Length: 332
Image (cartoon, rainbow, N blue to C red; front, top):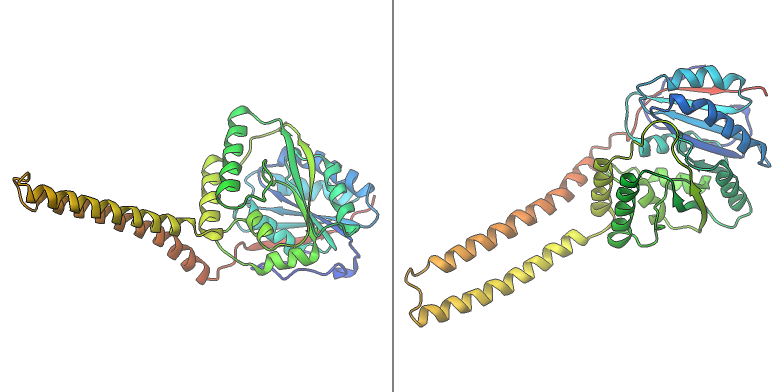
């Protein structure tokens, strides 16, 4: 039955629609038409290793290809309990994950990409750790990655800056895949922030975490949507959402500027008293104009970034809009 919706619902319970689900796996889908079939095979392999019922929650995030059609054709005969959710347009992978978390019915919820670069066994290990109450959040820690050199360099640079500037607790290779309890997912959904970073929020809320190492598999189809522009955008969002470093930098620049201005004023005064300045007032005036202009422009830029994010959050727009939702109960 097709259920149109226009907002993200509250977290579902694992008995909704009469189906008891212990594990849920959320998969954002964008441009993954060619990997849908092997992805379903991976999910079936994961399900076979678990000690309870599992569902897959596909969130089609305005995908321009035939990913949605492929899902609707293959899932009925897949042997998987599934939900297929469609966004009204492309909102991005993190809003898609939030939508999936809000519809997931399992006691334990995993999040993985549809590009087949994470080994399926990793999700099994996540769920075993969570169900054994060893942790509330399980994250994958990459020990190696088989990505192109340029992409690998960009990723290492991004996560290196993130660890140094924002949160040193993030694994060195970053976080691409994780799982958590329904309680943690509910807490994440309470943080309805625009212009934020889901992984940053995952670490901000606390709870018990466990890291499980894995080797990232090479991409066999398509190209990554994790572009340099998106990396810079998420880094800036995280910078202004999770730290006060820009404000501290502004204060530091102001302090240095005050010292430099004072020293310059003393030098100019001494030079004027010694008769070394032929155009009285010109040098100190230029120093004051240059320093004050620099300070004002830099300060307005930083404060403006905070004001913009505050303004975006006061709008209270939904982070994503669900256009349709369908539950597929499949026989083996």
